[in-house]
Length: 533
Image 1 (cartoon, helix red, strand yellow):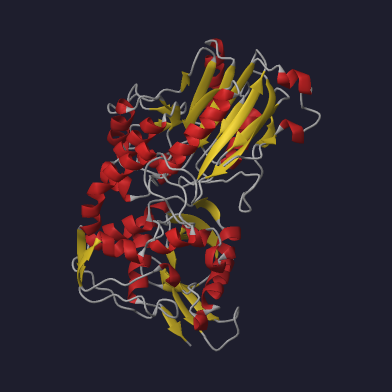
Image 2: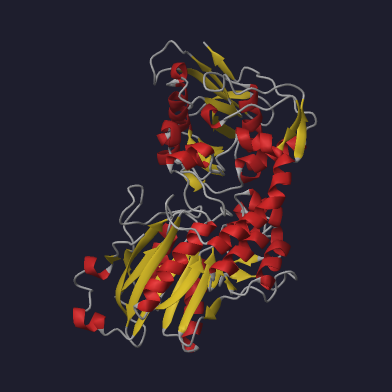
């Protein structure tokens, strides 16, 4: 579990302090950090879904709160033995993503965080998914400060005065929080909470913290990696930016990482500011070591994202706590969510339009219409089982959709949408899983044509039902799952062509469960949306 820690300043020779000065640093601080845990207290597979027996057998069962707790304790011991001050922080989106949250509504997350020993967290957008009352219960019970400098909840009785812009952790270390200003568009905070500009709020809070005696100021943000880099380069007085929201993995060892850890940005005062983030779904623990002078100026920064792998130790107390919290979930998994008038099989979903695929696509589109989506795409291979006739349990639905994928919304040109459909039809004969199940459009395709030239026509109905041909230059509102949007199953045009993307909406299984519950009994038939030439 030891990491080869990379020095940020060693990669910037002109900025690096002399070795002797670094060795005599007045302050030596270690920050252990998580982000976008999404209630993944049980281990997950590589797709972020619940571990199955095959994952355990192959060693592909990763992460989980018991492994995280053991890693935090181990890294804390190592750092403290080296004379370092240790902080444990979270950059938001502890909520939403598994049945732990569906049942406990944040109480499971709070109890696990307390057991691990967090010092602070910032709010993420998913903390607002069930309104201010759910957040208020969490914040009131938490022993650590919950932060968001750009949050104005003064007119919301449930939250007024509870969430602070910043907090002092010790005599001279301040942590400032910020949550994405897009939260009203992508979550449900209610009408009385306002979200201000993140940059201005952080700058104001940093100035306040410095005036109150802080010598080290850390920005703990849930705004995404690209915005974190803007913050690091724009807000004066920051020692580091610890981020979340974009699920970005920075690592010196993982091949899938976007960039190395930490990522340096030149701050407004001419000093490097490290920016860090450590993936998502409770699979990594970030460790950032800062050496600072007496005034909090950065001398050196180094660290890495620590993967929580199959063979790593698990904390027995947290493992017992997770087992306790999971007991009510068995009944939840057995809960009947609706009924079906007929068996909805997945047997043909990889080669042609299927009723189950239509159901999932329609449910996704209904959930995403408020965000502007008019077209839905779901890969047939993502439907891992069928639904029975008669009663449908949540467990049945979780077998169909086991990956805990999230709703992804974006805008896409007609040309890129056509490329996505060509990809979907390109391997239909092999059953590879990329075959598109759709809502909001009609497609005619020719399976005898060569891959890449199989789409014959695409029409898109308007609100009145009148159909028009797909316009290559027009931007369409599209919803899919985060796996496809990020290029999975060969959908690179969704990855590269998407605009205004948001990949971390509600879980697909939750969206489908709500859709099924509202339609009794469910009756879905293939209607020729995808027709062969």
